Length: 530
Image 1: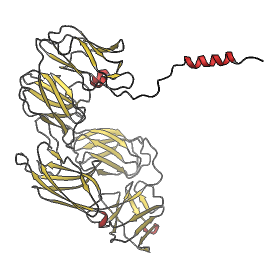
Image 2 (image 1 turned 90 degrees about the vertical axis):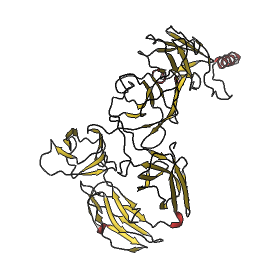
Image 3 (image 1 turned 180 degrees about the horizontal axis):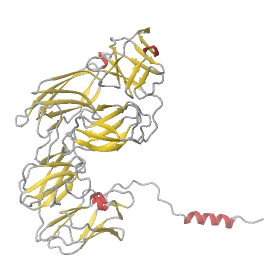
Image 4 (image 1 turned 180 degrees about the vertical axis):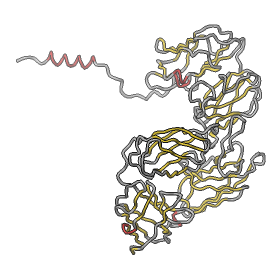
């Protein structure tokens, strides 16, 4: 009989030789800590071309070219590498300017090797002169249209004496905003400077593309006595009209986005032979995006169209679907908040409604009805149905009840309409006032938005007055107030040349909670800092 001891001993030794991750123990959440630097942080009269940062644990680099910010910017980006596991070495590829303080914002670029915890907020400072500049400029960048903080936006400082500006020259100093929109430009010299914020699409630290967003401070500032500044980021109206995006939707509407608010737009086919093709435009509220619905989709794919506006030809585009068109159109029900009337919304423009294929019942009693097609909103069917409280209304759309202009009908669709029970809805009363020191006096547009930012209600007014909103679904809402400078009852953007700030938007800091069966009253004193 053979002994099994040698085989068992081999398996035991193999198991002991396997390397496994240690089990248990708390997860490492501490970021890497800087132990020392060469030269030391805050050194003066620096003339070298190599900086070594020594950390307390092994580290790695993450998108270092994107995340490492050197202010003032360097003529050539430095080389950054990890040496000996714990050292980050920055090798300069161009001489530093004389008598200048440089800040190397390492931030999220350096992470610990095990868990990826970033050395967030860490900065290294060195001066080529005999002192380190110590002045600063702080503040916030806010989205002008939303009134909300703008994160990860470039903030730029240019010396006021320079002949160039943010369009033509790199900044003298720069940083990026934090998640709350705040920024801090530190280790600055004195003297007047111009302050900008920028969403930089091409990464050249200049405002030189039509789709870039800009913010600027009127006049210049001096870091020696600069208060906290607020910059309002906006997308200026394009100097010329053009089509910025085009897409054929699943239901075959052609969605075109324009660089600015558009007037009348025409589509002319270059390839179509015979037949008559018409287009109906469905515009958004800002009239800078439209869905053009064709009257016929036969052989439409691949055809070219000349798109013209008030200023002439805008572009030549090809109608090119990328998905298969759904076999059936869809129909949903929507209640008009002003009239209480229910209407049907089709996924395609409607040509005809056959009531013989519709079963409408009011409290189980079959009822006739007359559909009304809206000449301006071609996907809308007015029903004339305004249910009384407690009334049960049901509608069944059998196949071929609704026929689309470009072809296609519905499948069996079941809908129900009800009058909202006042006991399940809430009311909101908003009392508005303006801080006595405010430069804004109206007119105003007050907006009520859902938690996701969708507009629910809005009121335009020449002066601040109490606003009452009825029949609101319970939930959390936000309030936004537009200082309507040009009296057009909507928010208007600014311009860089000539310099014009966007219309000011104020946001109530705390959400408004609407409760069923209650009237919620909110007093809002509008202040500059909001």
